[in-house]
Image (cartoon, rainbow, N blue to C red; front, side, top):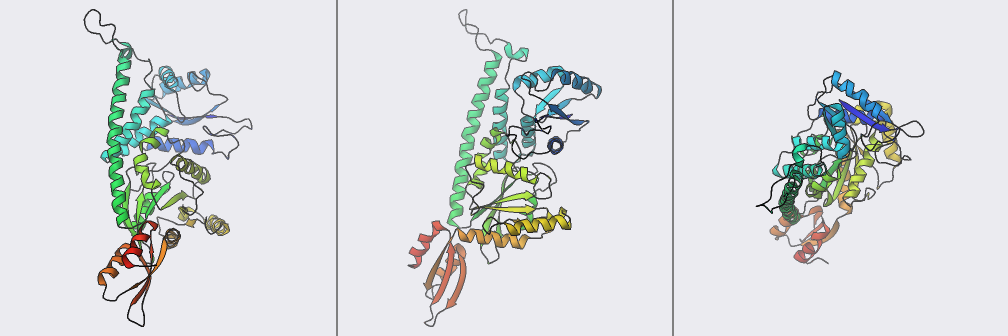
Length: 434
């Protein structure tokens, strides 16, 4: 059973989880639909779902006592094994609901952690998920089960009572968290070395971010001609993938597909996946992929912006962030015209690109926009080379974007190249440019 216990606002609508009531709100039906989608992402069989309107949050059970009793009877009748609550429950609330329902209770954070646990394919992904799981479990070690209250005996007659099983479990979890964090530090160093080696081959990094199921992996496959898993489900992709793409004028870039974001993404997950998300932090250009066919596309965009802010990135930095409005193939003609008009009214710097990753519509425009954004962050240098300097010409074609090349009257070769700012001094020194 999936339940949406949402607070009612004074105006009769619903307040979003943890957000000021003045913000534009997501419809409760859409929030419940997303929660059901999360549950289905780990192959749970949903026998019933529904919205539970709340006037206030109860400290003991989150929802009111009368509603708890009503749901307990329904859960028993339907023989429900698991109740998913689309909210963040405290350990005490979760324990009390489990006792009242006679079934396992999972809150939104726990559900997302379960999905991530299923999706992790690599050693790194597994470590990150385990770290988030342990931090979550550590907060759940309340004195709810008798085995946690047993005493571990001390030494001799004066050994004292020793530590309780609860304290032992907490200590073991803390020790395991320490080990995983050390291993992830190693992962972080390795990623840093990979980034350093990529900078020697000056391909700019373009990272895809977006709400889960916005179509990032389908877009990644379309742009790179790859076969990364792309499915119509939440969190189909977890482990990051990098591929080289070619831009319209021959330059190359590295495209990185990353884990999808979601409303109320647990902070433990953001912290655990920071090593992976550093691909986004270090990127030269970030493509914010949005599903414009979704009713809640604006709310989803705000949720992605919040995660970017947690990563110390400015969502309004249009020189570095380009919005990609995906799934226009799902829009009718009138809606597509509205999208086109909206884009036309945007400033040139903030202008989004409308695409369909599924059909390929707009991909050429997107590649040109990526090239233009990257070019604005790179430097142009004029060079003159001896025609016999084949090695120098070859080096430039491998390590820079050659914009123009022509033979002068004296036989020498004039070239204009575009390079990353970090490479500019190397090029000037190598070719004695002014």
